[in-house]
Length: 283
Length: 308
Image 1 (spheres, rainbow over the protein chains, first blue to last red):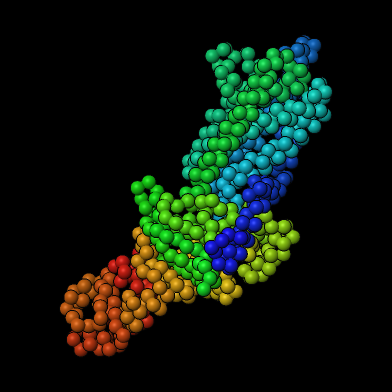
Image 2 (cartoon, each protein chain N blue to C red; image 1 turned 180 degrees about the horizontal axis):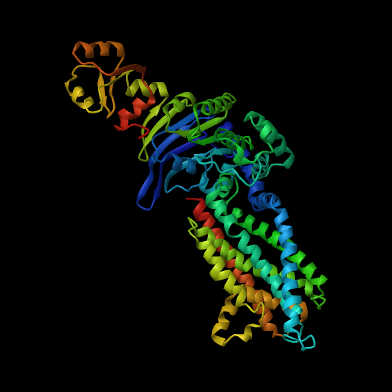
């Protein structure tokens, strides 16, 4: 017990020190548990979208569009594989980005501003950094669920020939988090949403999908447009997913670069989001 | 006498050039109910956020339960219950769920939290609302739920920022009753308010805050005795005549305040002053004798009314 304090305050102090231990260690997890409970209220949407979206895309592109692309190519339409096999890993990677753009935008605005649950959390023993961490953890778990569902459907379509194809789930997760943590940090800086988030969807997410080698190889573009792909986390996760899915031939250094780029982006975005949480909640 | 639970000395919070809190000092003893009374923008909420170990101070000393919030934020917050000015219940969750998730933040076992959640729902008179959506609750119910949530960790100190602002009179009285029970159980209360009746109802001791500094400190009765008279006579002569009449009313009461809509005459015998006024040949449209309140103290100290 601390010296120089009377017994009563002293015992309160001791009680406080003891009570701080668990939240200091597990705080981020408590936030994640809260988020899971919120997500549970829209489980229906998560599952339906998690199964419905892949089904629609795989069918429309991999089966529908593929009949044109694959015609007369003897199943080697793009880079030596059928269009379905080519596009499936890219669709899975995009699904990671979709989860990110849902979970790291409006729910963040909500927590800071519209229904300031983050303010409520910060009055409890939780620290702002733990609040940011808990959000990232909970979204990562939800993303993982979506990606596993997606992968299962790809298997149903017979569109993942490699035995290590399941690793594309990791590629999708990395891509989703790399984009997502940066997006979360950006959203955290917004005091008000005067259309910025809609602009992000329209002028970042959509073009990123088109210029990341999703539907056709990036090399199809003139070189002066290819940089969009190089900085796009989606391109890196897509290419990585292709390596795992059907052994897409690329130099090993490039595969390593994909991983490093995505991990670094995730960490940078995450650190940025934590910093803003500290600043914004501690005002 | 035991050590104070909260000690603030020359507490300062600056945002850029602006000092929201400009050198506030006070102490709160265990079990005491302490109030910060002042108008909007006086620096009360900022003080509360610093005491709540959320906002970091710019200067001064602060100790809560013997700990410095700069180093022991989570520890201090583990012993506090916080009722913020604006409700921040999670509207995506149901009523009881709000208590469950909040209790977990403190690292309390799920079973204990569930048990307390049921007890607190009863305390907040919301037992049949456990499964309701938060948005379906009335303003008063939301406040009571917020208080229930603040009690989930069995706090040593309860911080209440404008607890009854925006509530109708009946809802306020229910809330005051609940807070009074907590006070009786020995919970230390620190509350801000710009309602003098609330301060009089709930506070053992209070400070009057204006523009980030403390104007006066004492029990409600002491403050009234020191800065006001026993009674106040309010007379109205019509908005355009009040100041004109006031100038001609000499030797009436201990002191006079002229407001746009009425004249306040401070005296220990309001009725006697009214007689003097009518004998002098002035006939107010309406007159009223009432007991002095903290509103009068505030007016005396700042020259302004609390709610402008």
